[in-house]
Image (cartoon, rainbow, N blue to C red; front, side, top):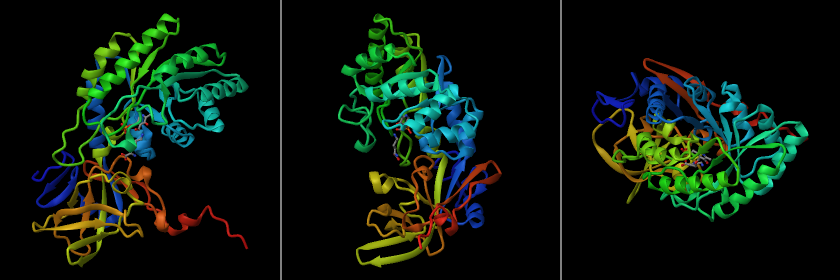
Length: 420
Ligand SMILES: Cc1ncc(COP(=O)(O)O)c(C=O)c1O
Ligand SMILES: N[C@@H](CCCC[NH3+])C(=O)O
């Protein structure tokens, strides 16, 4: 197991393996670009979270946005997790995957009337409400359906999670949640609404968080508010602290563990006696997936050397949007290295996976694996440049299954209508 990136993606005699299968055996059958997920890696993360939070009543709601493939969702559902959703589409997927609505929480600053209606009818555990106007609308839709909606207020604790600015969500200037000063008012308003049932409080400060200390500040502020509410006779059942734990993108990264998170937050939440909800996404699935692509061409431009591969920013957007680092490994190791930009076929300069990266000296036809691509990979992919979206494969020990077929050219136009 030399050249180990994780227990589930490692080299055996110069061949990259996923669990017990050489990645090259998979891609020769499936073609590229292709996402490959390790089920055992996902199960290991689930168990780490369960173990870390086992001594405190906690519901782990997987954040569907990280990877919403129905077979992936089923793994979380079958292992007793709940679901954190952000759209009607995610509600639909969640119900199809068999999640109990009483384990579904729903955040998002812009829920449509139709989405609110569907989630009220499903009877979800909590609407994590992000504005006063949403409270009013939710109440009137619930009234029109003759039902009650369970609500929590998503507060914005104004905490800096020390991550990329595009994925910091708990700062005052961001669009998310209701500011601390207005949160009391929001609860008072909610408590007067006949069709709302106050169940909890929610916050989510950001994503890819590599140091758990910002959680302390956010959870302390949340708990302070819980006590203020109690004084006013507003009693809650749970505190939802969102997701955000970071993962390993570089081999040398050492992200905090679920245990680190539990040790930081449980002692603070304990004072309230309320149940805890957490919403991890990336940390449950990110390291469990890779994107494999084939080398199309090599190109030398004097100072710059380019490796052009058949995956593009439409398949994995993170480097283009956040300048994110993803480690890239050869599927078959050769030994000698070159320094190159690894780029996709799309007509955008931002269509790159790595810049000036030292990498194995690959040839046309070789395969490269973009590591830690299980979260916000396929789920953010698109058909830009009319590229069919990649296939998704789930590996478990010695076998693998296609959990999403590669799209075809027919799929690209099937919803379009020709106007004569
Ligand atoms: C409300 C909410 N909960 C949970 C998550 C999951 O975050 P992560 O994938 O960083 O764990 C997100 C995304 O950042 C989110 O917006
Ligand atoms: N899509 C982002 C994270 C956003 C998290 C959603 N709230 C990423 O790839 O890192």
